Length: 296
Image (cartoon, rainbow, N blue to C red; front, side, top):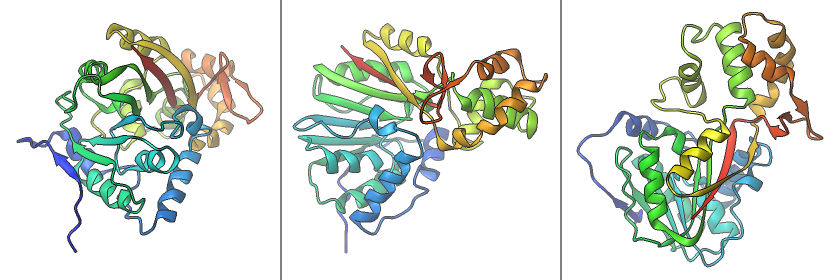
């Protein structure tokens, strides 16, 4: 049986390194879901790997809105918007043809015809939508992998309605991931990428060592970046991964290790902990997922 994948493709002559990587890799490891129940169970499991992430990047409360999931991957959050909101229109955009095909197959399990999937180019910022046509832009763990984040922000500003909102998750510099996992567990204890600068070692730690682009931001850096492009921006909060939580027993050995640079020892030394056991740095959850809200 032929499946109408409902994908609008923007063709390009050369598949970039970034496109090639994200075509071969995605967050669901190219799993093909057989039922709506299994699709929803995976959505719940995926969000549970980052404590309280669903509160920072909600999928509810967007009834009658036009939503753009920029970098939708294999459709995890698209499923959430369809199931837990009642959007007027739902766009999913990604550079990966394989993820878009998997999204289309998965979304058909959720019995909806209001979505449109669009393949975009990672070396072009163009979003093929009219000015002021999108009420809400959701982009989860995507912009830190792009080569042209500033041009993308300009396009976000163009397509967003005057009262629209954007939620963005990007990797967080002030995190256990960077200060304990990369700087100590990998570079010192395991001697992985020990000869590389910290941020290059970070790139190789997040989504696979061959991931072409993976950045992290200090909070003020990201706010300055979005304000440069005429947005009002505020830090909403951060989520910590269960992987980071599992590494907390390494905190004291890391502080004791003179080979670990002072910046990281000080960060780890001054952590406090909340009622859920999450580490806090200056009152902020010290997790890898930092979330920001933007408006015009």
